[in-house]
Amino acid sequence: MLYQALHVPEGHPALPREIVQHPELARYVQDWGREGDCGFLAKDATTDQPIGALWLRSLIGTNKGYGYVDDETVELSISLLPDYRGQGIGTQLLTHLFASECGRSPISLSVSADNPAMHLYERFGFEVVSRSDDSLTMKRRQQLA
Image (cartoon, rainbow, N blue to C red; front, side):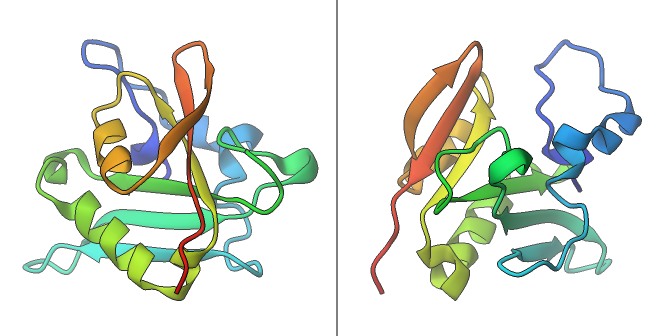
């Protein structure tokens, strides 16, 4: 699912699949199951095959991710297979996240400025906190129980 989380603007060639092995991307899933890791999988109801995922991970110190804000903020990654985008599955995953215990901490993410998913994040209370070239870092404040 990490590969599907990478935004490729329309009209641009697909990225090589090996890109997910680069350390700056692999850190988002490598050694999954560490303390604080949290995630949800979306499956096709008919085939029971994974079609999307959402995960949170603390990426701090020398392991900072693209959406790093501070050491108390976890980073969100979300991924959907192309055939399932635009069907409300991302909304369902985020709704599930924010109804869960792990959705109560401060959360950030990195998104390309031209990624249509940015509007989804805004609907869930994420705000732009910094810009770098064509990339935005967004943060959602901690929600009270």
